[in-house]
Amino acid sequence: MASTKFYIEKRKGVDGNIITKNVPILLSFSFNSNRIWIQTGERIDSNKWDDDKQKVKSSAIGAADINSVLQKKKDDVMSIYRNAIAVGIEPSVKYIREALKGNKITARKSVFYLYEEFIKSNANFSISTVKKLNTNLQHLRDFAKKEGTIEFKYIDDAFINRFERYYINDLKHTNNTIHKNIGNFKWFLKWASKNGYASEINLSISGNIRQNENEIIALTVDELKAIMNLRLTDFYMSVARDAFLFGCFTGLRFSDIQKLKKEDIEADCINVAVQKTKNYLKLPLNSQAKAILRKYEDSPLNLAIPVYTGQKVNNNLKKIGALANLNRSIIKIRYRGATILKETLPLHKTLHFHCSRKTFISYMFSQGISPEIIMKLSNHKTHRNFSRYNDIQEQQKSEALNKAFANLDKFNIFC
Image (cartoon, rainbow, N blue to C red; front, side, top):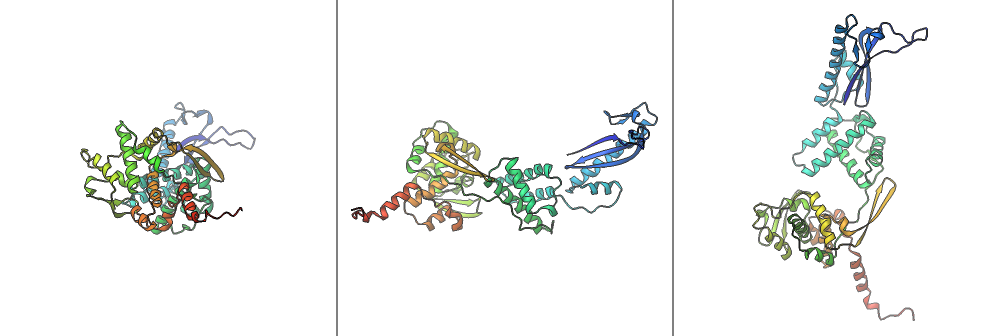
């Protein structure tokens, strides 16, 4: 955002009074939290200047010629600024001054322009990834309104810390969201460095915010049955429930269920090109999953399950959870900086699609299936990523403990 304003210089003379005769006319140019004062080369008596209209009064001698010069100066400055932005240059005060003098300027593309190029650079970015990066870029633009001009040479640990404080204090984001956004920003910085746009970038920069592992909620068998037994008449609610249950029975993510086509279905399995890991998965189907797919065999759409947007599905899942009386208390703990945000909610208010994947994995563990097989079915590539799902339900822990020590029941250590 750039703006201009003309005004006459207000300077005191040797007698201590404001000079009113033959006063210089100045141009103030504001842009990107910067301001530059430019001499127009024109002068006028203060009583012949119109502050409201920012020009010489028409009654003054030579008013038309002076105002024409002022308009040209304004047009020149705005043209320099807009042309720079158009080619991806982040203009500085020095850049504007040198351009007005007619000097040749060497300037590189702005951080924002290059971020846009980064987003466009990879055709394999998913729609959700592009959306996240665009959001991150907008946050950076908004932060720049407070920070001032952002250049690669000024991006260091202190910059990242200020960026984090902006997320905490202005956007009220929690630490996990901040950690992901800073990670996306550093991803862009690595790209810029690799492609030779900024050799001075310090890629070892880091902030103070660390990611905290959230509890991943899994449904119990009874809770799962409660959802299965619902009689839903609303089409969109029914589709949301079916897609969620399909996730519980297969372990597939929402993004993979959403794009699953009818031609991907075989007699006893489905063929999935997994969006997150970019690999191919042949997944066997149990009887419950097959029943869901059969429900939509005659749908005019080519989708295996005609599921809609994730946000609408998650909203409907909360309604479904309430209908199924999923009222188990869930304690949610989040952090914003050093502040702990603790909240206790009924399960139905926290229900979201990823619970289906956790439910699948948790149920498989409860049935004694080996971790290696579960990893294959859930398409986890590393034990590190898989381990966060292996938080077996409290009931399962109690059952396992009692079973392990059952043969000691005949001993009474208190006699």
